[in-house]
Length: 229
Image (cartoon, rainbow, N blue to C red; front, side):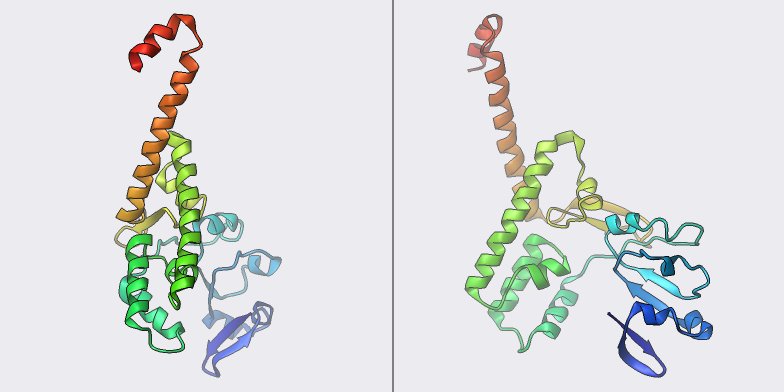
């Protein structure tokens, strides 16, 4: 399902299949904004004439490399959502104006978990205290699981890899450079950074204990192990 905006319609519901049957004149004026994978033979028709804006995760973009082959494709990295946009989107989705309590929860989520629309507007429910606590706990379990995997892989995985390959913004995020042609990967917030630090500390302590267990059974290294203790 998609919507067609033109001089004859202000958002008529249609389908991608129907767009392929538009006249060539309309196709030349058509801009297509999509986040769906560009699969299917129709997408590979270079005579379609339309201009495609493909807004998706890096992983999905890589999966569609066959589509942009032999096309003059430009790649831009979009900026992250600032607080005013998150707040405006939340207000537009809400049936009633948000209460101060909802706004406080939304701002805390934005500050601690990051400037990600799906996190602030979908993953965490701000409408009720019980739902808020439940969805927040579920989300934090997912965050801790991702952090634990990242820490366990050590030098074999970078912060950038967590976003580009996993397409997840629970632990890390991409900050586009000026112009949007490149990016810098970073831990998404200071609060999440502290959770990463805590997990890394525990993992380091556990790793030291495992090393000790491996050394102790050897008679030659027993004295060395006692010195470590």
